[in-house]
Image 1 (tube, rainbow, N blue to C red):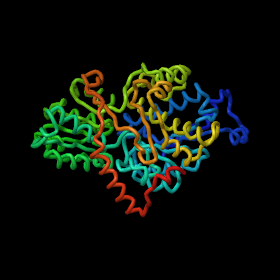
Image 2 (image 1 turned 90 degrees about the vertical axis):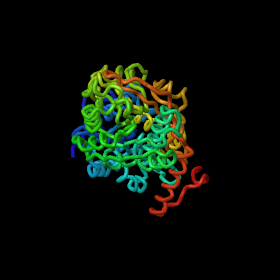
Image 3 (image 1 turned 90 degrees about the horizontal axis):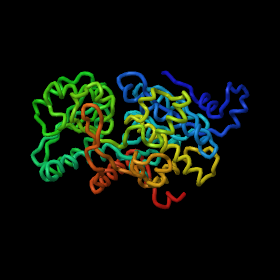
Image 4 (image 1 turned 60 degrees about the vertical axis):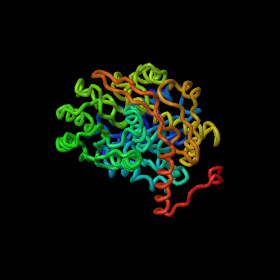
Amino acid sequence: MKCKSLALAATVMAAGLGALVTAPSAFAQAKEQFFPLLAYRTGPYAPNGTPWANGKQDYIKMINARDGGVNGVKITFEECETGYATDKGVECYERLKGRPGVALIDPQATGITFALTDKVAADKIPMITLGYGLAASQDGNVFKWNFPLMGSYWTAADMLIQLIGKKEGGLDKLKGKKIVLVYHDSPFGKEPIPLLEERAKMHGFELVKIPVTAPGVEQKSAWLQVRQQKPDYVLLWGWGVMNSTALKEAQATGYPREKMYGVWWSGAEPDVKDVGDGAKGYNALALNTSGQSPKVIQDILKYVHGKGQGTGPKDEVGSVLYTRGVIIQMLGIEAVRRAQERFGKGMVMTGEQVRWGLENLALDQKRLDSLGFAGVMRPLSTSCQDHMGSTWARVHTWDGAKWNFSSDWLQADEQIIKPMVKAAADKYATEKKLTRRTPADCQS
């Protein structure tokens, strides 16, 4: 495993020191909130994992350089390479979880999330899985340490079915239609299936499931099945090289890209740039905007890249996945800030205190604007019961050179989602012999 030790360097840079500090007591006395950063910069998922990881690092560097940390508490970090492998992700977690001041964990992979869900509960370390992970973990009364902020694969699938229904003239017009799900054959790719099956029963469309063996560089047989099935629509649940390969195969088999809709992990620059015009018309969900105009991105360019301390190339700053990494790190740091408001400003927060902060995020538009995120994302507010806080996304469409938004904001139907979440959470609680939290428990 390749672990990149950056905590020392981050602390030294943030303090403005020109040389390494040799006295151990200087670090023992420092106020430092530590973020383990699991990443994958190697292997077939690196083109997508790298900008995501760079955004997280650069936001930490910017907060330290611009603000001096959070109320005087410096943010430190150490990155650990997982290669998107579950076993390496667990090893990284075990290696880093005992560091002083550990705040939370962001595994960056659904498989790793599944493997860590029981572990973080035992270790009392909150886990952010923004837009991925276990859909049922929206239920904070059962999943006390998981936070699928801003959406899950159930909410994503629901939004896409609603959008397709609207294009057809109403959900009732889906009866007799055929929708193919081309998915990464992993926990990530399988996660939306229960919601899609539920919607298929409700509206009478046929759901055809076509798995693609990871990492997805060979898909000819899958797209032969697509051609044989002649679906009305294709949903793409891919990641990394699987996405660009799928678009190339769709082009080769003549399947219209405008009839393809990807999840928000299948709609970034690395997925389409090598396909170019061949991906023209392809649609994907988007949780956030992209580009370098937002103030937070401008601040990163000024305080980090402007000082030669950027983690990756400057022209990548503000890309879709880079911006998502920035959002994830912002939410983690704001959870620390929120916890400090209750437990003591200028203090290093424990995992339990950061969990309280995550359960009490209140990022309205005014707050997002003050953080430099105007126009980047929707407001988000969490609670003890609701660990997601937001279910909004839009669709953007590739025009051959860039992404353009092509829909209004979409929101999952809670009348469908909530009963499914509760049923799945209840099943998990029964299997694990867990007791649901009550409103009274949430006050403590």
